[in-house]
Length: 240
Image (cartoon, rainbow, N blue to C red; front, side):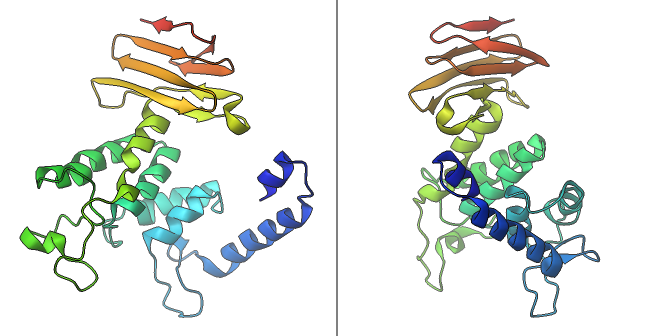
């Protein structure tokens, strides 16, 4: 709300004060030094740790940099913390991993979790996928033997993640007036795609030997191999 209010020229001080108070309260009541993580219930006294609460703490910058390191170790990379079984929320976890620069984790999940559904014959993303289940167990949910949606658009986050962290297109000002392109091949051999931006699009084609970038609007900056390039509308930039 602070960002939106500033953007449209409206008073933002009340929102800023509320946000600061909320962040302070979350850290005061929900951070556990013993667990090295945020707990999900202050009143219960059980100090239960879930991935969900900690993912949001990192995503929305409630956690400090020191807390983020502890959350990564004690929660996100800790197999003893209950795994997420919905592709919808797994998308948030992978987004946080991208924010932390842990691209290997993203790729491992893409090739195991989403591909796990494909290997079982899925042609669309399921509402829930638990690799520990087998046979018709995969179709059950909500106490109903066939209660699961097998076409759940909320689980299509890899499309977004590939655009953000591999094609690497992100806005650097509201409405993509300016934007950054920071491609990352990861362990892929070839990445090719088009990312829509306000008033245009960016096309990226990347292999180990060659990068091609075309943006059909000005305002873009390419960052690749620690070098910075200015993108000119409709002019292909090739780096070998």
